[in-house]
Length: 205
Image (tube, rainbow, N blue to C red; front, side, top):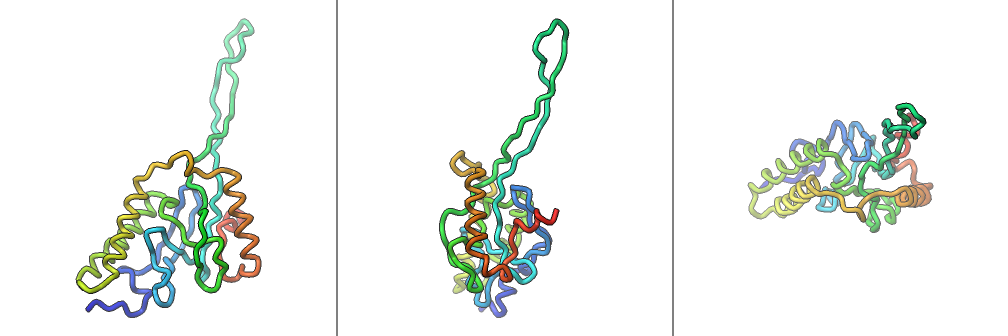
């Protein structure tokens, strides 16, 4: 029988990620995949719960734009001239969660801390895939282990999300982003010591 003693070691290779990058450009360092004392917060097909410095991480799902400048012919005044135009283009990122889930450590459940795999960039998904794939192969040694089936589904979810092309209705917007942030900041005002909030990262810069 394959042992699952010490749920921090449930994931083969450990639950530590040196860095995590989101499609919206947010970068986290020294991150742990949160499992909980009994593994109840382990990765699932609908994503992962992350921890930083002993606190549960809540992402802020920012709306991102990139500004680009280019030259266009100026109105004809009898001589050739160019004018510079600057426009803002949306960086395609997924919208925040719309459903409610339970959260660890007695944190209010209306705004879920679990982050869907679709929000992470390719390198982060690749790192997570390697951890989950090794975990699947480990638990497959025990034909009676339910964890092999569980993590096989998680592995498939990571693969599917890595290749998924965002549809228009799945994209983040300024309204969706701000609505989410207001919701988190209202619900977590009495629980700041338990969480690490993504917006703090950008406020420090």
